[in-house]
Figure (spheres, helix red, strand yellow):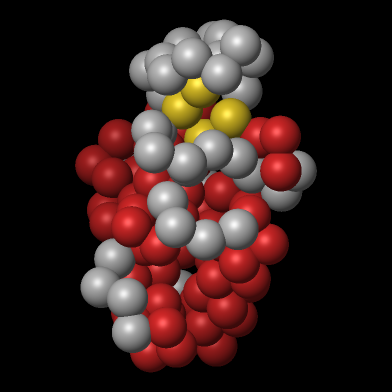
Length: 121
């Protein structure tokens, strides 16, 4: 994982199906119980939890260093927030995730990915 657009695409893939997305907690297991994003049983994620899980899953040796991954996560988070504020006038994507539909979250990711592609980040 070497770019914001790659990270955002991975996040979108992780929560593309409604059953893999959640609200009001970072992650849930198959019973709907809140769980740590790192737990193998975690199967649905909010937008922030998905960013964290993608970061966690990509921390393998001989790839991007942990610091670089955290920097990509921060840049992805910033891009999501600025994309959201430019269209919805909501101050943060975590609150947005918890108040809108799955479709709207995916649309936000699509806009952020387009922005990342245009900026080549």
